[in-house]
Image 1: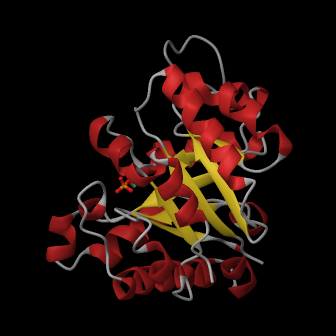
Image 2: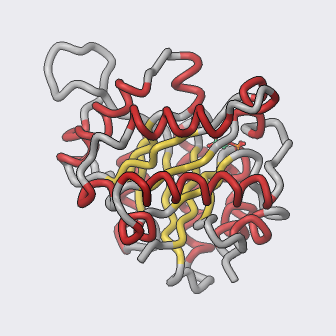
Length: 253
Ligand code: PGA
C-alpha cells in the first residue's frame, strides 16, 4: 500500500556549514515527533549527500539526490552515476524536475533512461510531471501529463512501476507562492492514478505514492495531504527551514 511521503528538495542552496546545521536541526526535531506514518526524504545538492546520509544513519529519514546521469559510467565529465549515488547511501532520486526540463533541456526520453539506471541500483525514482501556466490556460494540462507519463515512465513493467513515486508539480506553482488549490491537486492526482490503472491495473495504481509540489508550506500542507489521492509533498523553499519542514512532515491526519 502506498506510503505518506514528504521530500525536501534543497535545490542549489546552502553552503556546507549551513547544510550541516540544517540537517542536524531536522534530525533533532524529527526525534521529537512520531513520524511512523510518513517517510521523510532529504534531497541536498550532490556534495552534501554523504553528510545527509551519515546523519540519517539511525533511519529517521532517507537521503535523496536531485538528479542522476542517464549514462552508466565512464567519460562523462560532470555527471554523477546511479552506482555512485548508491555507494553514498542514497535511496531516492528526483528525476525530470521542471527546472531540469527547462534549463537543461531534459526530455521525457532522458528521464526514462535515468529511471532505468536508478531502478537497477535499487534507488526509488521520484518522477516529476506538471504543466506550465500557458499549457493550463490552453487546457492542455491533461494531455501534457499523459505524454510525460507515457514517454517517461510507462516503458516499465508493472513490478518496477510500483517501486516509483510520482510528483505532480505544476510549473506555475513552483517557487511562486501560487499553490494549486486542493481541488486542482486532487483532480490531477486522480488523473495520474487513473493513467497508471489504465496502463497496468488498479493494484499497481494503489501502490504508487503521488506527491504534490509547488509552494507547499506549513500552512497549506494539511489540507492538500487530506485529499484522497495526495500522498504527501515535494517541498522546495519550505524545506530550507527546519521548523517549517517538520511541520509539513507532521501534516498527515
Ligand atoms: P517550491 O518548490 O516548494 O519552492 O515551490 C517545489 C519544487 O520545485 O520541488
